[in-house]
Length: 174
Image 1 (cartoon, rainbow, N blue to C red):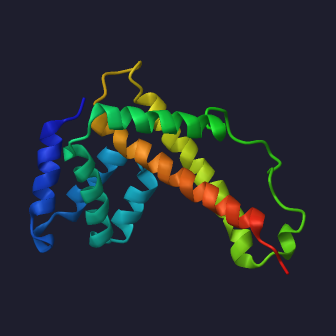
Image 2: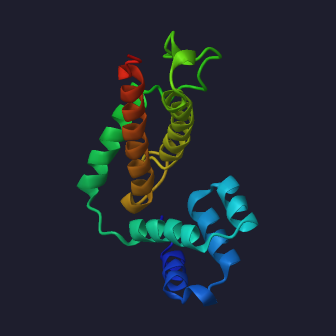
């Protein structure tokens, strides 16, 4: 269940003048919201107030948004379709990458980078899908506003993933 006190605390932090905000408190709230330890450590090591503010604002907006249950159900169906299309429910991929072109090494670096980026995108999609499965309605009472950010991220990642494959597959070296 969503903690409304935490949402109020987050909103109060965002409403403060950026010069008077406690950066460490903002980073801690970011960690509580996302569970992304590496990014939390990076934000602490190299302070980046605009980025932290943008991340927290995004999550705050999700928490206070007036989302209808129907919207989340629709996004959930799309996320389930994405998960099955990309086999996100399975363990890590096999040792041999599939989908690499025979002429991959002869492609320009920016086209080769799409293939590498897709490996990262797929890994992140698996992480987001796992978080969604842990928040599923069968496992716990979870308001739609808590599932929404993960559903939205999964759908956005899938769009980027498919766009990259389209560019990679359709590239003609001539």
